[in-house]
Length: 271
Image (cartoon, rainbow, N blue to C red; front, side, top):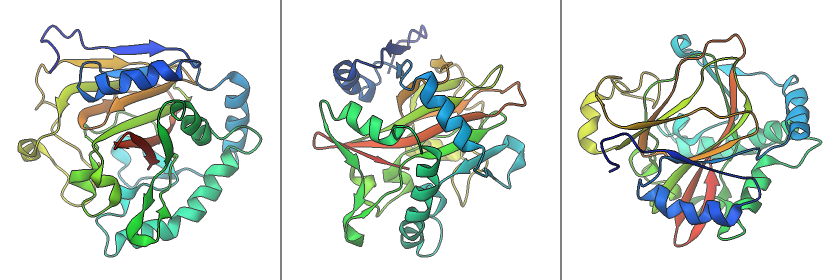
């Protein structure tokens, strides 16, 4: 754990430093740093193309209106609680990839750019599922947020037992910021990796993330607040509890999100 003086911070690097980003991953896994912020991972022209293409897409807002959360794409934990959920997820992947790629039309795919960035050091690819003939996972969910998120963690060994991504040694989260609100929307990352004992504070009983954890159970746990700019890529350890802060804007926060699992020296992306 980090020291109790709350000197637990994100490390900022530039978009041309893949070797440094990869060298920081072990420190991130050991909770020695809170996050890696890669500034200007996407340039203004790339963001403009994606923003224009987004106008042709429909955000699916969740029924839980309290937190004003929506998405374009699919995520595995949205299927894991369903009967035959794994098959349904992989059946839905091709259409989700088509929608995602339409948003990237006219520019270099940010997913491919992430693969290439970390591929400078690690064998990096999209995750596959051996049980289903190496079916490819979806990677690149776009999350839309108009208000504060729930307090939660993401950890495949707990939330996706029986899926190949649950066998990883470590799990990171990547958020590529496509649009930021006029005010608010910081990512708060707490120096508290989930443990089974924390489940007594969990208000979700079916699908992950609907209600999240009691917001006061972490007390004065040290945390880092990362307020990115559009085009920044933030990497953090998702087993740590985290939460998007209040958003004070009619302009939603849009982030391209993917998990990145590490196993045997290789990295795999999935959502």
